[in-house]
Image (cartoon, rainbow, N blue to C red; front, top):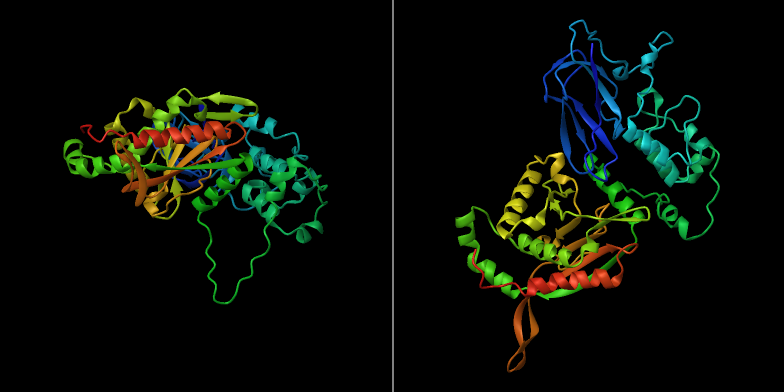
Length: 446
């Protein structure tokens, strides 16, 4: 009887874990090739995981709401044999295993992808005795300077008493007075530049709640976004540069051609595709903006994949990616922008739609904001925000001298990772985007 292990897939370059939302199939169910087995969620998208083979689901190793590291075996499929025992997997039983329980309940061995994560985070925390700690938990423990003694004291809510991400984050958020009585305190870090992240991650002061206040629990996606944003600020020293661009020509062109553009191409033309087109041109001029950082290695990206921050009806944010954007003309970019935005709002994005971005654009002008200081979308090193376009008096140079005229003006801001992007590169790149927008050819056809 052949057995196939179902692995938690990697859903994006910076995604190291996923949450199991729901098991569509149960142990003993017959499964067709590419039939959905379970639904998972990351901080970017909800996805359905298809079966890699036809067979019978014989084991489920993690429960609903478990947070699982990428590369971990989550289920087993038998490709043949009708004699498969259809009793639920021990991993799904609510009660603790008895003394007669089979030894098969032990944690599955991680695949090479998961094993590498264990090695990278094992410098500070290791498994104590027979207790298993996931790579994610070890990474958080290392980052928060949690000692092995402290980690061993944390009560786990996961399968077989394992410590989950929620458990360790709850421990970190506890006031020191609550934890000191139960565990040995970690040695206080010395005051140096290397402790900046630890200081920033210190638990916030308790919030006073009065009788008329409403307490709203974050939804799952908002919690993940919050974690991702805090991680980005801890990872990258952010610097933000600003320019103001005269975009009168492109505004006049769009106003003149938007109806004909819709009729000809079947797409509404907004300012976002035009801005993205200028960004692509500037990246070609300054390719060191299109990089990622891996330790001390700068990874210069061959492809230009533009992420576009998109607001969802829930108020959350997601960043679908236009792949190989430099190979598209304005019509192609417009189709991608409209298509991805529509899929995002309908919750129909696929994992591939939000992967492999190399630079991100966010249009804060759609909210009426004139400028913003966006947070870098890791593992990228820069993100640009476009503000609202407003009519303003401006000095215009003419052949007869300078005059004051009413022009369409827009602020652009660029947040960049100062570890690899200095002010000259970041400022020059942003100015080049502004130059391309100001030089937009208002006489071009659609």
